[in-house]
Length: 170
Image (tube, rainbow, N blue to C red):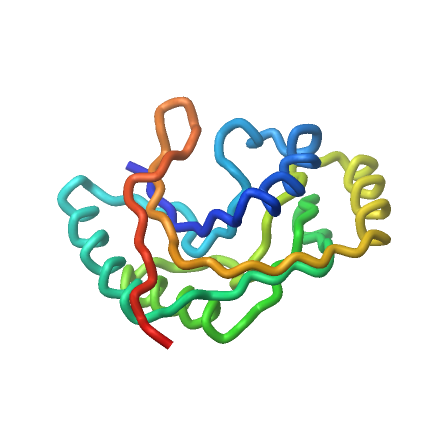
């Protein structure tokens, strides 16, 4: 089965993202706006029990993590994806690194924390969306205290299998 690990932002940021995703993201109905920590990976039912134990331990190593969005960016020319750029911070980077190393999964791309607004766009759609949004100022900050282990259903949608709350006190 396919699994992934993500942070779901608060309602305000999800509403902002969904206002664009409805039109520009074909995966809009399959998963809420999220920050991917670990891309999809395969695991059996037995393996996922071990993964869950590791994730619980990792969650205990961290306290709340700040999420700050100030602008829109794009992965072009690699792909026609427009996204809200989540500013990198040491806690977010450390969480990602610990997840990748503990689960022994590979990452084909550098970690760029983001919330997708549009993907699989034509060149014209990409230019239109990106040109309009990069002129706007985004100023959103929140604190997250958890991450989620997700699994993919047969219809391609993703749902939460387990939630892990950060446990480290400041």
